Structures are given as C-alpha cells and as structure tokens.
Length: 203
Image 1 (cartoon, rainbow, N blue to C red):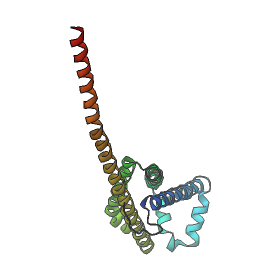
Image 2 (spheres, rainbow, N blue to C red):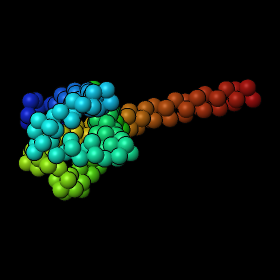
Image 3 (spheres, rainbow, N blue to C red):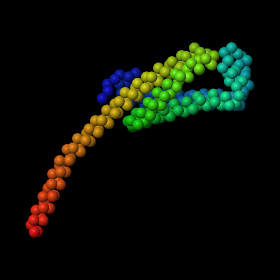
Image 4 (cartoon, rainbow, N blue to C red):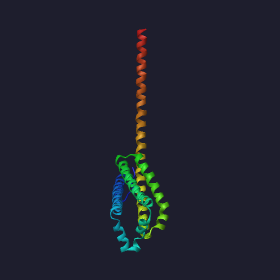
C-alpha cells in the first residue's frame, strides 16, 4: 500500500473524493452564474447596457459581447456551459471510481483531465490576447492548472494503488487455483482406479 502524504490525508481515495466533491460544487456554481447571465441578457438587456455606461473602461469584454452577432454569442456561452457540465461529469466519475475502487472509472478520469489541461494550455495565449483583464485571467488560469496538476497526481497515486490491489488479487486467485489442481487430479485418479477395479471384479 502507498503511504504518500497528501494535502488533507494520507489516503489517496479519501483525497480523491474531496477533489470530486469540489469539482461538482464548482460546476454547479459555474452553471448557476452562466444561467443567471443568460437570464439577465434575455430578459433585462438594459441592465448590461447600464453596467457599460457606468464603467465603460472596465466593461470592454461585455461591450464586445453585446456587439457580436447571435451565433458568436451562442458559441461563446456554449463553451463554458459544456465545460462546466463535463467538469461535473468528471467529478461524479472520480467519486464513483474512488468510492467503489473502479480502475476503469479512474483511468477515464485521468485521460479526460489530462486532455482538458492540455487544451487549456493551448488556448491560453488566445484567451489572454482577446481578454481585457489579463492579470485576473492569468491568476485564475494558473490556479486552475495547479489544482488540476495536483488532482492528476493524487488520482494517479490512487490508480497505481488499485492496480497493485488487482495484481495481488490475481496472484491470490492463481495460487488458489494452483493448490486446488493437485487435489482435483488426485480425486480424478481415485475415481479412475475405482472404476477400473469395479470393471475387473465384474469381469
């Protein structure tokens, strides 16, 4: 068994459950924020225009959004929505894998998380170029990368732990089958001998 010391516990499964719960909470929070913005945009558009008029220098991103066409707006809003739903799905998948100790679920989570992390790094430069508040974006992105890297490390430790348990279980099963084989062979030989003797007596 692994004895690594993590942030809140020395058990990888326990920390993985905490990370899964955190992902699910943040996903719900992001979906709520995005839904609130869409509700305001569709029902109270004057509120957004008022925010721009009050502080135009700090609302350049919002101003750009309102100028864009409906297709571009839909694309811009769909990306964070899809990302939030996928993050919530990853959280559920990780919790199931850690709680029920399923290697397949953990492996899928690792592949998805690593893929999303690489995609985030590839699109980071474009996001910085087209965003007004670059300092805030950089801070949030770096914190997210640190969190995701730590999560991958914890879940990778859990994955190795589960694989080791599988190997031990497979060896145990092989040992049981190996020990059972001689007994089964002796039993078969005894039955053959008894059958042969019975046939001789009848003859």
